[in-house]
Structure formats: structure tokens, C-alpha cells
Amino acid sequence: MRLDVITIFPEYLAPLRLSLVGRAADRGLLDIRVHDLRAWTHDRHHTVDDTPYGGGPGMVMKPEPWGEALDEILADTPADTPADPDADDGGAGSRGPVLVVPTPSGRPFGQEVAAELADRSHLIFTPARYEGIDRRVVEEYAERAEVRELSIGDYVLAGGEAPVLVMVEAVVRLLPGVLGNAESHRDDSFAAGSMAHLLEGPVYTKPPVWRGREVPQVLLGGHHGHIARWRRDHALRRTAEHRPDLLRAAPPESWDPGDRRF
Ligand code: 6GU
Image (tube, rainbow, N blue to C red; front, side, top):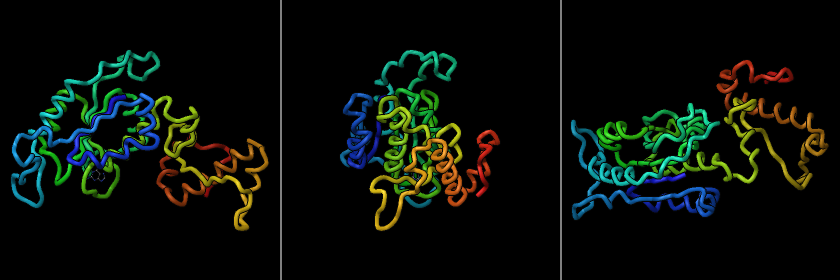
């Protein structure tokens, strides 16, 4: 997967070199390119913002540097990967670059969107500062690429760089070969499947007693059926306490006959 990020704070994206994402890049599973938007300015002060038409507080990012940056990066998008006969895309194969525009006024970014993005071969992120980017940029590139305006939650951040770190990590851990064990995201909170509407319950490791606190006996017993039941009960209890909205939204087929109501 190719990832481009265009930002006025390239250093903010340094964590992409670390940990899971950095390791995936080192292993050749990812080609990450972070670009300084100011490289596409032409004035002495490398100006990227100006006052908003119509008045109001703050500044708006000028369209020209974004336009030049995106033209250059879109001209250099990798050739599409061959069509995957098992892909859920009618055999069309991968479908060109996706322009991801982080904004608090975007659609919600969640596990399902992460999985959709993980299925594509080229993502271009355009994190903005100030009051956002001149609207004409999204209009222009919506005609040439798939544009997704996405928000990571109902709060306002100073810029889109932290959301890019969040979205990239959520997407990259879904790529084949990135996690050690192919099973390791099957039971994730929010993953599709029987646990889709449940938060993950508590986990334990050695020692069996720590400061007088014991690991629940069932987890030490090796009875896989009992362990699965215990885990699901605790996931249900935790979801009822922290996210009752998820339980209310659960479709009937996601309920197990053994499920208790918490
Ligand atoms: Cl994507 N950007 C900003 N600036 N604030 C946010 C956000 C994005 N998502 C939630 N808050």
C-alpha cells in the first residue's frame, strides 16, 4: 500500500516510522511518503493561508499549493494491483487512489471505514490547519479521485495530523501480513462477526496472583467452552456499562442463546 501525507508539519508524522506502522514500512508492506505542503508555494514566505471570504475568525488554507501538490502526487499513483477474484468489488480490482480529507465536519471514521481503506492500494491524506482548506480543492479532486472527508470523533483538534496518525494505524494493522497472527484482529472490538457489537473484556497474564489479586480461575482451567462463555459474558457486561448504544444496535443474529442480559 502506498500512503502519501501532505502537511505543513511533516515532523508531526514522525511516529509513522515507529512500532507497527514503521515496521510494516521497513518490511516493504507500505510505502509512506510525507510531503511538506510549503514545497508547492512560490512566494518568499511560503504562504499557505489567507483570510476567509465573507469574514469571520481564523484563516483558510489557500487552494493553489494543495492543487499543485495533489496534481503531482496523483500523476505518480502506483499502477492498480490486479483484480482479486475474491474481492467484494464485482471483480473491478482496486479502484485508484483515495483522497482522505481529515475534518471535524467529515463522516465518522470507524472500523468499517478502516477496513474499506485497507482494501485500497493508494491513500493520500491532506491534514489541514487553521479553519480548513478552500472548498474548491475537494470539489476539484472529487472529479478525479474518490474523496472521503472523515472525522475521528466529536471533538475539535487543532489540525488533521493527529487524526492521520489514528487512521493510518487503524488501517495498516488490517493489512495482510502486518499482524503476527492472522487471527489477532478477529475478536477486536468493532470487528465484523459475532463480537461485532461488543467491547473486549478484561485480560490477564502471569503471575497468577499479584498483590493478593487472583486471575479468574476459569482462565487457568483450559476448558475452552467455559473460557469462551466467560469472555463473552464479560464483554457483554463491559459493553452494557460503557457503550449501551452498541447493544441496542446489535442485530438479533449477533445474540447467542447463552447470552445473559446485563
Ligand atoms: Cl479529522 N480534524 C480535526 N481538526 N479535528 C477533529 C477531527 C479531524 N476529527 C475529530 N476532530
